[in-house]
Length: 310
Image (tube, rainbow, N blue to C red; front, side):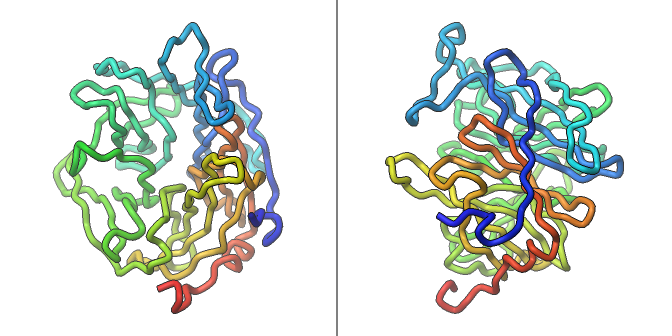
């Protein structure tokens, strides 16, 4: 598979922050540009993937646990401060997957918040659901957790992609030939799904990744696709994508891996910073990384969708 360094000139930064507990891993970071600078959240969990299996410490039984680490960056992307976020208590269901998984940072009416996957909130059945929470940066606390009701209790809901600056997410790049969004319905806590612009066939297997960030008159993001690797395990391939302001997909990059061509790499953040595009991603659910590209390099990776991709 093509590596990002084969088609562009990225700079990579490994995020060596302390995990939330001894022996835990750090991975799948997200990013957000704020007036005070770039902030991030790094996921930290108690399991490791070994030969395609989730291996959990014996003392945790079968419970998968996730905590999240708030990170503040200097202009050169060095980590200035990192602290594990507290989460206000919520009533659980007893399902053995705990915490807010794969957060995406977003701006909210109250400041900064996240959307994330949850599985053990009371009243739900253990299937993945999207929840929102507000972030108190000073206190290092996530609060006001709210699960967004799904259209179907039979489906997992994961990897919704926030439109930065809007109360909306890209839900899917292609359903029935159209992009779908989830947007605030005008009543606090209520959302509706909207069919947007026609979508090309190439997007049929696109899955969620980063936020969508305003970029050159439209929206820039990173998505992933899944394939079977040489060892039979899943491999994630990524693309940069550019949508018009009306959310018509018009430009895509070729598929690429960030650092490892036969591994699960997962991008959950993208931000513009100091004339660059910064992408945050995890490797093997065990490492957290940033990749930076100049804005021109990012744009030059994006090619108009051809007729045979329609």
